[in-house]
Amino acid sequence: MSTQQVRQDFTAVPARTGPDLLTLEDALALDMVSANRFYARHLNRHMLEIYAILGLDMLDVRSAQGTTLHLADGRKVLDFSTGMGAVGLGHNHPRIIAAERLCHDRHVLDITKLSPHKLQAALAHNLSQILPDPLDTSFFATSGAEANEAAMKLAERIQTPKGKRKFLCMKGAFHGKTHGALALTTATEVHTGFLLGVPKENVIYIPYGDIDALHRAIKDAGIAGQGNDIIAAIIEPIRGTACEVPPPGYLTRFVELCRDNDIVSIFDEVKVGCGRTGRFCAFMHEDVVPDVVTLAKTLGGGKRAIGAMVTSQALFERAYGNRNDCNLHSSTFSGIGETCAVAIETLNTLHDDGLIDNAGAMGDYLEARLEALRVKYPDTLIDIRGRGLFRAIRLNFKEDMAARLVDVSRNPLFITYQSVLIGAVARQLFEQHNILVHFQPGARDILHFMPPFIVTRAEIDQLVDGLDAIFASGIANSALRFVAGNVKRVISSAWKKS
Image 1 (cartoon, helix red, strand yellow):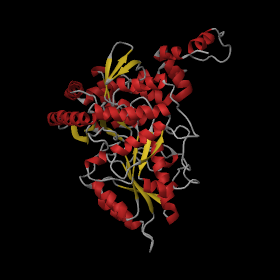
Image 2 (cartoon, helix red, strand yellow; image 1 turned 180 degrees about the vertical axis):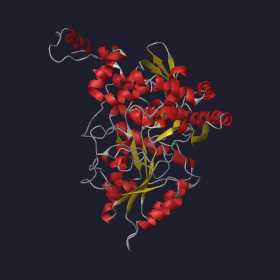
Image 3 (cartoon, one colour; image 1 turned 135 degrees about the horizontal axis):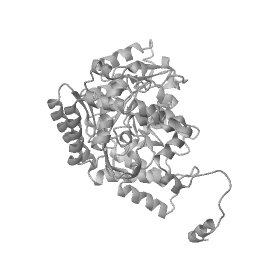
Image 4 (cartoon, helix red, strand yellow; image 1 turned 30 degrees about the horizontal axis):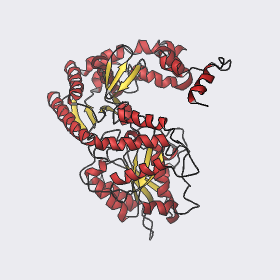
């Protein structure tokens, strides 16, 4: 039977009399009031409250292309958040769309568990060509947290037979919210009420960027006559929540200390890997190679959910090197065919179009423009952080000023004064300057900028000009408008009553 005949047969089927299901066309055509009603009832009404506070609950994006979100009301919004950095190529990049279409046209096999998949093999080969030796063996997941879980389990398989029982991580780190990775995440308070995959007594937390603290931790974890108790040490080469770059040479010394003390070194490049800093991985700004690197976000081309753990064949063999153990860690959706195809095209696009170099160049331009802003407003903008197109500014929020605007102790909408003020700046950038940015719960005085690698100087100028206007009028004015525009509207919103 031809595809056309199948379509004709389906269109002849009478309307169903079962559950009241929305069609895809229905879903795409939903107005935001209706969509939010479904969201509140069936997803997470409390997150909807947060979106409303930021003025984003009615963000009706009808299409997205490149750096731009096209809204239903005709507005064009520059996306300097990109899903916390996941859309490195820009929204709906034509080469990624073409790769998906090619897979559809050829009816590419997505899932097989009974034979090797050639697209998985090709993607793993490509990563081995880009990453330095000996990082040549991959495991594919569907998220950064899962990639970190895979890294942790690999290290455990190698190290627990020696009696090692502890992980070492950085204070203020974010490695994911799955049970294992959650134990290594301290950037925000996300542990409460959970039985952690790795108990807290099995985790050592040290300050980020402090090599002496790593020395001491290794020494304190020593076991008489048996080395130390540390399985692995994991670090973000740029600390994601605070956008903090470690001191020069720190990552090199970090790996050296790990190798000298039989500790597996894991670099979490989920947020900044695949080109965001102007190198394929942020650790490549130093002459260093970890035992394991994890990737995600940009690897999916802004269209697919994929993560990767990459290590050496030697370490993989030590963990899973026989037919009985080779599949101890696996996933149903590991390395879906079309997802691998998109990742393959993403890596080629990054290199063919010079997007990694552009991320470095535009990152330098953004830093220069922000530095000029810091000179102009030294009492407001007190620090510029990051590398490449992962940048952030730290703002000077005077709590005495904020306290005159809103009493957070009696207002459940605002947790801290910083959340009022950073929210005010983010919302004003969106409402008055058509720019979408984000901040993180663990660093409420830091505003993040993570545009796609295709961003232009003119688009960076639009961001900086918007910040200039906000700082010129004063953050206090932004906060007043933010509070006045939220309290009454959020409390009385229709979806909250439903």
